[in-house]
Amino acid sequence: MQLFRISNIVQRIAEAIESVIKVDVTIIDNKLNRIAATGLYTENIGARINDKSVFAYALKSGESFIIENPRIHKACSRCKKKESCREFAQVCCPIKVNGTIIGVIGLIAFDEKQKASILSNKHNLLEFLSRMADLLATKLIEKKKSEEIKLLIGELEVLFDSIDRGLMLVDVEGNILHYNSKAVEIFGKEYINNIDKVAKYFDIEKVVSRKLNIRNREFYHSINGNNFRIVYSVKPIEVNSKVVRLVITFNKINEIINVVNDVTGASMEMSFDDIIGESISIKMIKDYAKKAARSSSTVLIQGESGTGKELFARAIHFYSDRRKYPFIPINCAAIPENLLESELFGYEEGAFTGAKKGGKTGKFELANKGTIFLDEIGDMPLHLQTKLLRVLQENMIERVGGKRFIPIDVRIIAATNKNLEKKVEEGEFRDDLYYRLNVIPLYIPPLRERIDDIPILAYKFLNKFNYKLGKNILHISEEVLQFFKNYDWPGNVRELENIIEYAVNMTSSNCISINDLPNRIKNKHGKNMAADDIIISIQDLEKREISKAIRKFGRTKKGIEEAAKVLGISRATIYRKLKKYSI
Image 1 (cartoon, rainbow, N blue to C red):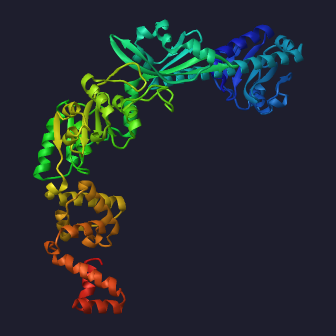
Image 2: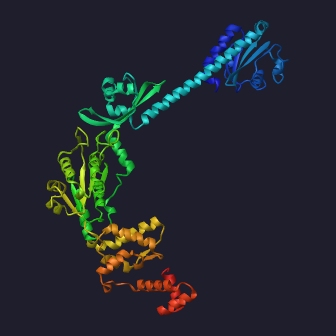
Image 3: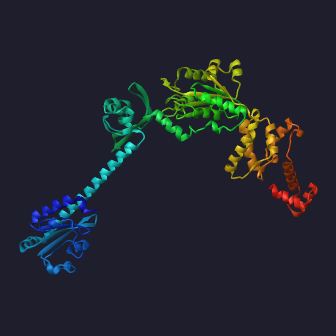
């Protein structure tokens, strides 16, 4: 701590001492800078004192002393100006803060009268100066604390305004003591200054009397005719077990939903370029889907399992005007029937046993202004089909256990691998809902109807799993590609991806061969296809037979000689082939 920070106070105290003692006063800091002075040294304020002076001695010794005979006292022994010294007497009193010397108060007598004034009551004089030194130390500590408090207040104000939630500090009477800029943004300047209107939302009397911690409650607030749902929390501040303040935080629910979607990855982007394929059928369906994306009408995507229905749904969303808002997928077949309604529409606190405190926001609310993707819509229970139809007609939802309707703006994209028309005929799916969903129908062809895309997809997955598994497999044999083209692919693109991942794990060379494929598809394929229909390249055939021979006879010198003999080739040739095929 430095005395110059309170230089005005130091000067006033120097003048006060001078008025009592009638002796010139000089006060220096711990760096020998003259901070204050009276009398002859007034013009030298700010100058540095010699480091061999009595002040330097006082700083080093840390003790108070009186020099009755200048030039003879040991404090003067090092002073370069002692021979020309005009002083008759001197007093030094260190100024200490927590045991650290930060300066010295000095009294200087320039005549016998002033010297007599110093020596007349030495004990009381030193006690008086000690009190003045303590006063300076106290003022400096106060100054430091004041600056620290101002800094803390500044930091808190910045912190208040940097919080991305509205924040209020309220007393037990409901008076708003402080609020941040986000609170003004949410409520509006005129409204937030009207204490009665704002405080009514938070039931302050109940919170104070019961010392309640409230989390994630909500209310509706209207600005210029527009209604907003606000979610808030209240935390009491207690002093001596008594509530003295309340901290209230709040935000618009749509902003909270956007944060949730960002964090959970619900808005993972997908474009039509990410859908791999060059066949005529896939190009046509992509062009059709782009046209559908420009509309806000519902889309019904139909296709077998594994054809990429969700990829198309995401691509439609991110190609549409809703791309900046959430894309929320939900699988209607993966969630138990008794939970599906609350997942879709949310629930209020206490709606059922086990309901979360504060309730829960449903998928439709999370998708507001964006898109909800209802996968496996054909498995939705009939009673929920009725509720979904109402949402489509009225653009409002009602939470489970709720008493109010919540307006929403959501585009619905549904998907199924079932024959919905047949389910309508059998009474398992509402015909009116089917027609509302099937405004823009989209059919994704199975992989067996887009054979030209199989090599493209296979190599795309090969690159993916090379990277994922740290492999460097360069080729897929023509035999395998032909095998793929003749296979019926009940699992479609998803099954192809699974098979390539298996093969990348199993192969021991830089080329995937028939032997690297799962037995289940080789066996299934063999039942449906005559062996004569499979055309195998000479290279793949040669590699396969050499591999079989090595597995049978081994890699010893004798084993390789035996393998070469059975294959009808020389030993040099088999060594060359082993190297060529990385066997």
